[in-house]
Image (cartoon, rainbow, N blue to C red; front, side):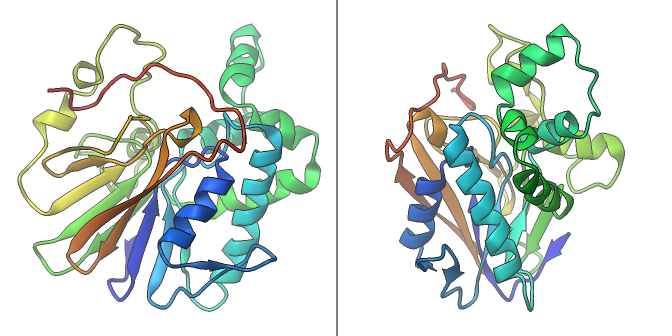
Length: 271
């Protein structure tokens, strides 16, 4: 979907149930959140979540995140769309688990336990499950912002080859939602696993912003930018602010309102 350039866009990296950090990031960017959890004072701003707003956090924070996004999706989009959700691989997999689209063999059950803990929460809470399914149904695979001919930003959850970027085919959608798995390719650097990000990078102002890869900081090479700065791993939550023909960044630290997950970083653009 193509975005209007009448608005600026606050594009937020992988939240993974970091609801306290999400609210702080929005407030830091000038939004107001009332006592009912509703977002106000948008003026010309719109909000985009770049996918993976679920999983890895504890169940209370996951439930709060889904409730917050659900109520604000309908609050902010009453007259025109001001809150957008891009689908991440965690939303995709949890959807498949809770709608019985995955055959639950031993391997699938282990992956569900290890990576997709939101599934268990939603299976026990039908009301929350329906809210998640509604958000899933209303999510996008890609969004694109253009400001004049010499500046644009394509937004997807996962990095992908240019031949798939903003294309509406099944294989293109799959590649924009999830890239090659790090967990299944241990010992291989991200730059080796995803060589196209370096090979296809260009020195121009047609950017591709994505998350998915959980990095210790914003990672950028030419026009390729990763803004998943590992909030759930105790690091920070980051947004890219797109306004006219400029991009700037805001990050807020992990607030220790829940136990962080753990991981070893596989650094992107590690040169």
